[in-house]
Image 1: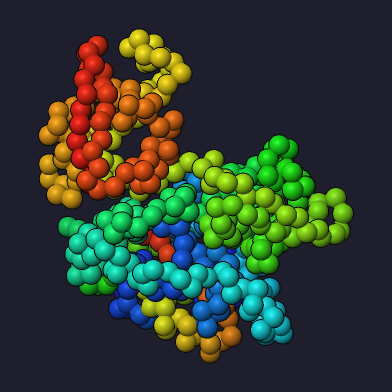
Image 2: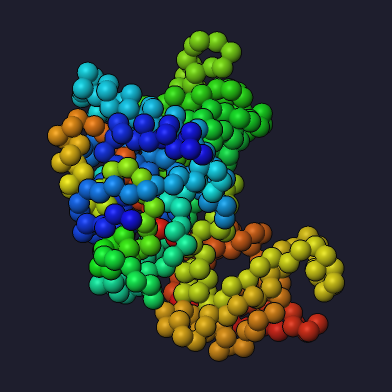
Length: 365
Length: 84
């Protein structure tokens, strides 16, 4: 660890290092990142040009996709871009322009409806965390309440390349570790050992940079990749297809939006029953069944208390939603809440309680 | 421990990088400011218990860092992180 410490210290000396620990007042036009991260790094020019990002999370383990070697390589690449910018100027700036979004609906977190009432105390009491993981949920609820459409890109944010069939090595910048042949990545010709040098013309410094490009990609279309082949000293241009619904191969059930969608829109939390539990309750094996694990607590003023008032109880087994099988997995359940229901919609749940079936009806919020 | 200057100033501290999983740029000090006689109580870092940084960091002051980056010609390394 001492050796790594010196290595990083030496590299860090080539940067001006900034630590931002509260997002109150943070300029979202400058800093756009996955707010479910526990750590996000930006490599930037003083004029605000973003060279790249570092920091990736794809599940509850917030360290599975970060590695000191990957960070070091990203830092080295950022230094390279910084040196190049004085030579290449506008040409390089054009390639880097898409590293930032110019159409953020809210330029600061405080502007998102609903955020201020959650975090206002933090402004006065600086030792409280801003809780930026509330941001995505607040945005989705704000869109929901305004009657705006919620697309897959609002829910399945910062997708990993895994959803297109390729795993990247966290010890590298963006080197392919595995490829599924029968996948968009495989069909595009991506191979193990390939280094993704650019995506859609953007220089790639890290897995986070790959996620950024995919985050900004359409629901159906293509992504162009410039790859450096492992077996020869050559670069090749590949085109990766984005089929309709490509984002839905990712898992969003670990994201913080689950808390706000389930408490405030739906009114309860649930978990899918394992096969053994379904057999125990004599329920069909081929249908997803959910157990109610928690009803929105009374002290949570913004939560939907209608399901509890309608008679839903902890432990109830949900076997149908609006006369149809429940969504197949938790990600799809969250998507159903956000995309297929509106505040005020009547929902009908068929539940099994101590071997008896009941219908619970309540309004979404 | 070096007395911390108010937020916005440069200062030097001890920085232990936990580079094994999980990746941490700050090692928790194990002490919490509440109930302890901590100097510089109004300091943001003490309040956040974010005390183990090595090297020179601009703490919650992007504008000062950008000014320094323009002066030195260096790029910025900006970490957004809630301390544990």
